[in-house]
Length: 472
Ligand code: NAD
Image (tube, rainbow, N blue to C red):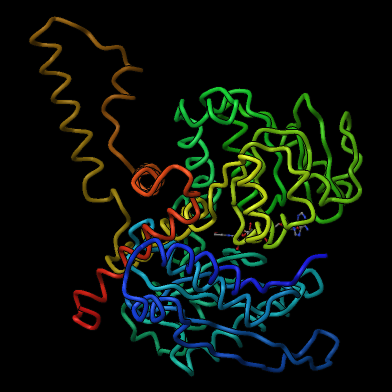
């Protein structure tokens, strides 16, 4: 019999476990745990057929210890206040882990986006933004949304446009009111794939530690690792793509209508094309169909990547999970009961609050770009290239060596925006992984990575409060 524990309660349980290990003042821990403000709203939307529908939506700001607050907006039929508060809390801890100076927030609109035309989605998004502006729940220094489940660059473009028109265009930093925008609307190169790239980088780092891999009965590195991915949306698709490019074998892919498996490997782009053409992932040539999509989580593999929604691995299916590593690309895919079962089975869980932080990291870069009003690399790219060229010319002269054109091209190139974004993301994911691993080592190796990540995050947030003298 499964006992229902809400998503928020699951996050709070993880927090409490880490809080008790952290040794901080319980009053301070209570303050850090609580959600500071929640805005619950309903508004009417006119459908294309002229009918009026009432839409329910939320925005939760979990912590104001740093401003602005930051977190995505999801469009989903399952979204509710509890879920938005849980996701906002995760954002607070996520930002602290990757040293992004924001508090956590999250928004949600309770709709199934597939049932609305682009025009209807635009009206819903603009009206939601209008309501957020009215209550000061959005702004470059206040609260900065981003994409999440069911939203993408188009929604972010409507949000920034609505914000700018409501603030009269006089808001110099108006573009920084939301991230994940299209490039022409103030977006940044690399944001679309950032969360998936971050997932890949985190998994790569974890798989690079020989002793950890040996303990799991696996070889070091990604080459040949058998991977199952649930959810081929923004995060799942890009994570799968980077993992496949680095030698992993995609043995199972799951979407909401069903899943497919092939121990010899599935070509990601061929599967995506097949799904687009036929309307379903099922029936892909050479693969076995799994009509009950969730059963794909139980496939024989090395790494399982849930990249859809929360509560996918629970106490019912956790005993049957065969993966040695669960890489939480989605938020909250593993319940706390499942966490315990996986730990007993010796499965390593790379926790959501670290693993999917690539999105907010690059959102931070986008926000910085918007505030500075100049793209990264614009000032120094050409200067760097000229300096490198002069240096190589000096080496040629001093040594008599002669570099080929292809050597010269690759050696002198200065970094452009995408190079810098990807480099900053890689540095962040590697550095944060080792910070968490260090906490794990200090507190004892039986500590799971989720608790270690929470402890790391709580320690950093505590410093902010202590420096304010609120809890000496
Ligand atoms: P998305 O809407 O782009 O993709 C989600 C995909 O999951 C869709 O293709 C959907 O059809 C599929 N799906 C839904 N239910 C499913 C099921 N039961 N089984 C299999 N597939 C299913 O959303 P996304 O942005 O990729 O977000 C996915 C997860 O990653 C969410 O938990 C989100 O909170 C988290 N996340 C997203 C970002 C981001 O930058 N987009 C950042 C951090 C975390």
